[in-house]
Length: 331
Image 1 (cartoon, one colour):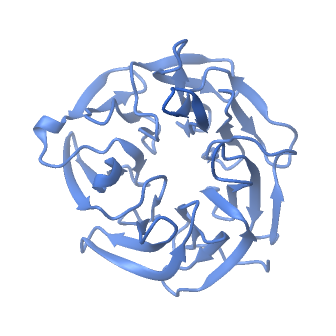
Image 2 (cartoon, rainbow, N blue to C red):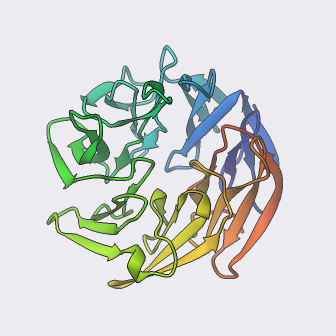
Image 3 (tube, rainbow, N blue to C red):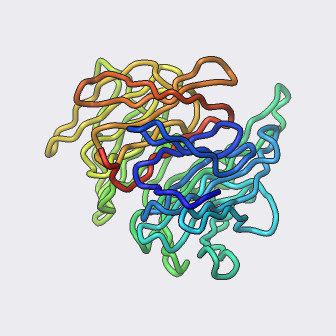
């Protein structure tokens, strides 16, 4: 594809990796395939993503890189596998991801092979009526800062037993949180790397952890709020003042922080299941996928100032995914 100006563009899935500018509606196709799990590098010039050979059972995929400056798309690993959504380090130098064997890796694109840091990452499993596993879903790691990575730890029973933290060199590892965590992106470090929010399950509560002292504070429980507490796909805004998440099929929920207080509000059943929402770099808008059936959806920009959804004139297809460029748009 020709070199593109990537600032402000939104990556989305529609028979491949496509971009759309939220203000002009300009679109471009970067790669054809079953593409998803998009992750923009902090500089806004590269996108790591998964290009699937099939979606189920067992979503084998190539880990790919799209370079907008060079106008190239290339694989980052020699072979496909069962990989999680990749995550960029804050300096854009490393990618972290996990696999179906419960391994956590870091990879420096263009600079050698991945390094394995841990072997105790939780892998979610779908089972049939006889209790046999029929599909595997590696859970994604989250960067705390440029030196530490948080991930879900799997215990001997195969369940989530807490949140672990490991250094990028693999020399330091400890369990930061003990106990059950909702496995589907049910935790999110704050952008400043000082705290971490997690959900213990579908019934809550939401808990904030001080990563320096280890102190845990219950932020909200269902009994204390008229809106359901988000427990899935938790994502902080870039300024760390707001968090969005989902409550399964019930819709998107917004949590706003004002000093030590938190306010929660339901925004309605706007999205589709899965990782399908992403903050704008201004922290006042986010994009999500509104379902129009099992195989189609459309992109919606939700403005927190007006509390109104603004649909874009593009559609999305499985694997439903969307990611907003972290660089400011020209709006």
